[in-house]
Amino acid sequence: MSELFRLLRYARPYAVPLLGSVVLMAVAGVSHALIALLIKPIFDRVLDPSTAEGPVRLLTVLGHDITLQHFVPSAIHNVWTAVAFGILIVFLTKGASEYAGNYLVNRVGYSAITDLRQQIFDGVLQQDAQFFETTSTGQLMSSIMNDIEKIQVAISHMLADWLRQTFSALGLLYVVMQTDWKLAVVSLTLLPFVLIPTARIGKRIRRTTRAAQDNAASLNQILQETLSGHVVVKTFQAEAHEGARFRAAAESLKSTSLRYVALQALASPIIEFFGALTIVALLTYARNQIKVGAMTAGEFTSFVVALLMLYEPVKRLTGIHNIFQQALGASQRVFEYLDREPSVKTLPGAVAAARLRESIQFEKVSFHYPNSPDGFALREVNLEIRAGEVVALVGPSGSGKSTMAHLLPRFYDVNEGRITLDGRDLREITLASLRSQIATVSQDTFLFNESVESNIRYGRREATPEEVREAARNALADEFIQALPEGYATLIGERGAKLSGGQRQRLAIARALLKNAPLLILDEATSHLDTESERLVQRALSNLMEGRTVFVIAHRLSTIRRADKIVVVEGGRIREVGTHEELISGGGIYRRLHELQYLEGDSE
Image (tube, rainbow, N blue to C red):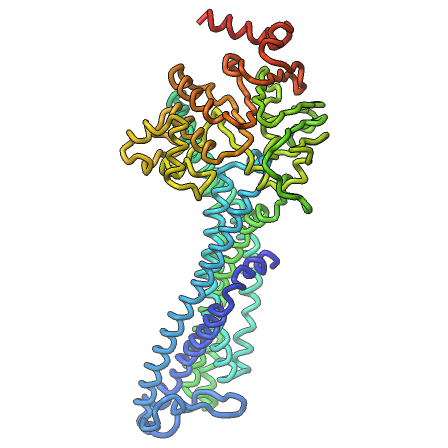
């Protein structure tokens, strides 16, 4: 029930239209019950000419008789005319109330679910790097789209039906109790035999729904990976393998979906069977009552019709209960994401940092990734990066270079020691102000399927068109952008698929230029480029690096010769620090790496 109440809390901002829908559905429910009441005068008065005059009693409320003439104009005295008028009024009222109530409750439902979807999306964006490493993209997409779709069906469509059927059931229950309460009590004794098994079915439906949603997430993950990696799939002729993976996941989803269908379908035959038992018993009883004159044919017909009509909303309500159970099963994963506290966040008392003026320092920093607590990526790292310096990190793969770069914007927090910005621990600085001072250009440039201009202004949305073009010119990108079909308005495809590697890198550099952050991280920004593209990108990088503090990670040592400080990292520790000339003359690890690269260059 806690999940249900939590879902319903999202409807709180829309209390007024929700209350309106409740009132309208109550009117629709009463109108539905009046249909059963109109059966009695049709059989006892309209079809019997000898009783065609006089008031037509419908029911008694608090000791007062309510007649049909209360609802029709006083000029109408003929029973058939009054009944006909009453039928039209009832159906018109019922239809109008259902229409308006259904619209209002769906408006509330869609609004509440839109808020929930936005909240989970915003919450996921605030999560730390560990969350994205341990949670697949397919699972996230499935939760934000498929799981919430299940909830939306329950909150929007099913809530409207639940209100409609609940008020109809209450109205019809009053009708059967008012007609013959003893007979009604006997007839309704079978309800527990219907409700108990359907409630147990609902619990199983919730578990089945969670399994189905997990299978849908797996299917989504395979789809996302295969489509994104279609080049690898084709290159290694793995179409059959991926097809088999997709088929297996689809079969699992089909199996759990069919289990849900089987469970969902059980409620209806259970209700119909017990309803049939009730009708058979009632018909046997009614024959004797009508014979002795204790009940008229019209009264019995009205009672039976009301009882049959009552079983329909009961049947619908059990189905709605199962739909809600399905939504609650889907909501479990959604709320897990919402309730997860990111390990990296702005701490209480954190202050906004001023623009970097003096230095960034690693002070005895040790760090291990959350999933490998025994394998330290960094140990006892001490390093000072002074404002305006170009500091290059070199070393073999897995030595910890990229880890140091990830710690600067606090994608992770250090396990021991601290990193300071102008003497203040990064954990004492708000995340927003810290990351506003950092721009990154990496080897795996990520661009969005938007226009060129939108991608460049990504870090500074308020930039003017002229500022965007100035950044592109300094990144040596303006020329090729102007040659695109729609210039700066050209859509560049998923991850910039319509551009070459060098063009993507220059757009990333333009994006960093426009942000104008004082600290720049270059993570092997030219490692995947051909010679000509690398030359253009290096020129663009020179423009970008001017007047900034630069943290360079490079495999190609030729690109960092002019760095103010070269830091050699190996095994998570800093082994050497110095200029290019100092390290070459020192005869250590850097010199060995330098000689190896030149030997490889000669062999090519």
